[in-house]
Image 1 (cartoon, helix red, strand yellow):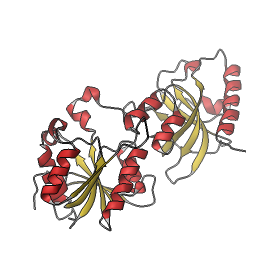
Image 2 (image 1 turned 90 degrees about the vertical axis):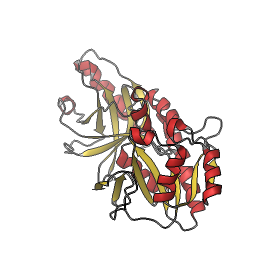
Image 3 (image 1 turned 30 degrees about the horizontal axis):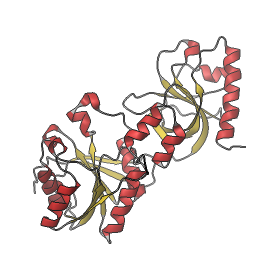
Image 4 (image 1 turned 180 degrees about the vertical axis):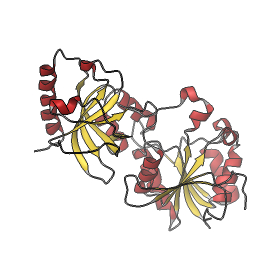
Length: 331
């Protein structure tokens, strides 16, 4: 049965940081490969970073579900990347990581809408009809009170309540969490851009992170006694400013290793490529080339400096390691 939402494009199952398979779907085709639900509890949003405000909405959706499956609906790419690319925000998490975090927060399933210009033109009523009613048969919908949807964001929670009363589903619009300055993805980006990693972690409920595949660098760190796992910076994601940080390198199997992390171009050696370079404390035996890793930032130690000579650089790196141990409360 076709629903007008496009053909099925199953992306498949990927194991990233979790021990369970996550199936990511684009579109809602209503095809036989997409299991149709009889009724569900739904929450909708971009959910970039799945910060504490998002987690609160998902918990509330589960409270209201009363045994129904909790389905989180999100978008890929971010709507602004389609509507106004010059205003598209940097991302806080990969799509796969977002799915994992949503499930960890309490969603039973994540469905991803392939956001296109055609979808951007849907009226609020069309979004409700196609997504909430036809495909998900929503019995309850929980969103943040600032939720907007449909063409030119004309739909709001008042409209959603009106439609719900008319068509038989309950709507709960939650007050924004976080107090005087509500939790938001925008706030996380601002903290990260300023190097305020503790504040970013407070909003996220965990450390801010970047992902990437380790590749071979200049090998200078190894020569200096500080071998690093080098991940090229992807400017589409929110990467902290240049400097040295205390944090963790997390391997794909979940192993979490304390690390002193450098972000920048390595100015002492006149480098030009911006990288995230992680020195795992007390480890010179790791072979991480080609491995997907997650780098978590706990706190900024210092800004990036161009040193005059190798001895000054190594002396500072020794101090960075000592400070990293202190901040991470390591022996």
